[in-house]
Image: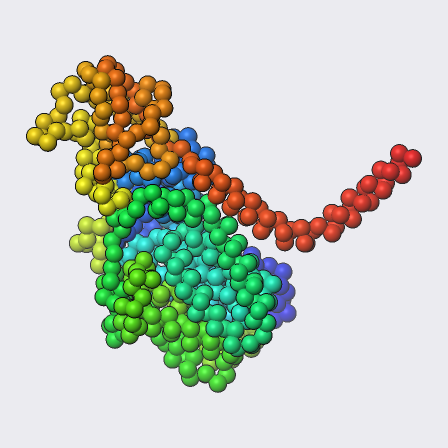
Length: 579
């Protein structure tokens, strides 16, 4: 019997693992998917607008593989260039799914795919670090079903931060290779950081801090420091190249737009009290005002301390660095000294995301040691019991959240309300501070309203006949009784172009960044479209060739010698045949 099980596992191991992860992914979303509802929490409405904007741009004629810079059909439909400031690469699959299954159904499928990807990546990395496939699966389950990840997706609605969870194990493995393992695999850090950069900018800053701290892993071996530092430089450079398609246009926009309307927070104020963090974790609190990392990781920490002497040095390091990140989430750390340097992270408790994977690793190892997982049947039993316990707790919390929110809360999305919620967000974080005062008028999409005089009267000699939404912009139809300069209900960003009756015109801007154009007497057609800048085009090319080189290199190393031999044999046979 044991021989048969081992044979099946050896022959169909990865297929069975993938099937298990697919079932777990379905279970993770099941409570909400079966209800046909969704709790938007703090930020999910914003992210649904991002997805809807991408999906609609594809329908308007955009390329399926290209990120449109602006959103003309969401965020109150005024042409918000959200994707220049907030990376959207990892949202493209959600947009494709919306084309196939519109509304909540497409979003549920996206969550399932994200969870499946997180489980697969975490298991692969954990398998390499722990040296055991069963432990890899256990660590992946502990990580993917972590309380903080649950809060990100279902309580806070912080979709982008939740997506980043899929890539944090790659970042951790990249640091491990550079500081402790085979530093010739430095490219894993570049890949992980680039994927984070293409998903969430704040998480990129968190990961940068995390990389600096986790570089202390070098002290476990203290070998080849100079060589590893050089490879760290390679990783940083490659990460920038891979993510240049977003980072370069972002830098271009920030240089032009100046200070934006993103809300600022005082770090020492937004950090959590340590006692409160522990209490909320013990309670598995389900509120964005009660951020925590859950009772499971507390229990695993206690278990790791109990078996401390039997843990490997890497396991002990994982426990220590995880609690360093938890420490950074609290007011115990002097955040007032780092306000200017790290103020962009807004909430120090975001460091809890970095603590989850090392806690899952040491937790899996501690369970293995405590339960003596030395035989295959024992591994099956322990991993099965632990998985049922963790998934069962997650389902219970999901049901508890559902009961709390669906009876009284107004932040519930249904199939009927999804279109309105996914298009009407009024966020103006990436509008310059000077342009905020004009947003109420901009959202009317009305040229007469935009040109209202100081006495409150609209211009009698100016009429708007229509407004058409097109790919990356709008077309206005107006009639003017006199030649004049008028305001468009648009805030200017580098890349937007104006045409009047088919002729390009350089717009002027007022102090608020509102676009002014000159129109002749009579009927005019005004085009206001976004065109990719030179910086965008060059950065996209740089990223494309960097990714192509990165993916082609291992393929060439694996198959290149064989192809060369076949080519030489063919060439020699060809020469012989022609003699």
